[in-house]
Image (cartoon, rainbow, N blue to C red; front, side, top):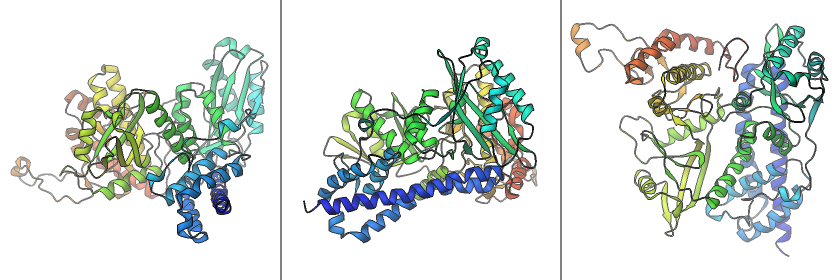
Length: 575
């Protein structure tokens, strides 16, 4: 009984830290509406980064309060923590964000203890939440019944979802939306008097856009439904389009996008609602998409250990060219790659381990514009030795012995790694693609580079092997050890040769600084295949011109936040 009281006090203090985090999370999130209405785009980007950093900041604060409130030997008495977990469960049972509270508890525990103390007795490796929910609550949505009059239903929607700025031309947009609905859905659907539109009550905000998200359905069929809104400064709000295609809506919620700002009172219900309209998305990705990336990490880990426990899958080296900095392995039946830093890099790589870690963490906080894969960072993964293909394990032990080791003869310890969504490397994709697929992939490859540049990101190493192709056919960058902000790069034209001998020399006849980049050199570095080189020059030849890159730098330095849209627009495909 003597340990009950301090265990209860620890549980209470952890929950107080969670409440503090949630309060600040909501404050940043709830400011998204005003930032959209006032077109404060740079502030929106800063708020997005601040909200991501908030979690670790608040975990550190909570851990420090625990250290100040309890004697070290008491706080680090591992036998106390099953009691603390039990007390914590009783505190969160009636909360609407209880699943997030479990993840918070895990974060605090891991900040205090080494990972070899992790167990389900002391923390929430497996959630306790589903068994405590007797029934699903009603999702927080708004329901509309057109009853044959689509125009009136649309008008009511945009009366209910009003903003501090008026619409630029609401009637024009309503006419366009009705026309698109009739074009996108089977003819009988729009006439069905049982047709229903259901939208989540809160608007989702990201970058320069706002989104109404829901579904349109009959008793027999349903389609996702998204209305993207834009605020054109000085002109008002424009309803840009509507989207009913599941794959396009999936791209909006992609692992390559920044996280939405959305007011969500009961996270599990909203995730359940999203899961109904996007059944192909894992709930880990959905939680992450609305800013709960730490809980997304928890759900990912639970899915991983469940997969390992219930399949014969074994880790193998990921297909593709071996990296010079990272070693990449995967599970064939699990759509993820695991990336570890090698102990020694190729001599051509002028980076160190700490720089690589900084680059990967940078990607978490910048606008990924749909062109960089999100990552999760893990420490001290432990897997059964039998779950590794011998050749895979041998290679990992050879290239990263400081990161990978065998414990007790039957466990593989991965001290540090990142996880990313698995994609087909672009160079491999092109080897097996037909002519039309090659053209589409190279078109999207160029768009990816341009859109990253628009977000002030220069990939550095733009080789095809560092880009992947998603299941939706989008080209995404995933190798971050050489990324930098575009504004840090010095783009230069190659000076003309001084003498004939200059052109024959194997060394450049001009000085080259550490941040100098010569776009004229891109063609021979990027493409071995001459036909692909010529095609890419036709599609995106401006990327070979230093002046193109300088013009983007000037726009970014002037404070312009360049539009990059995560959906197919009315007239053209921007993203």
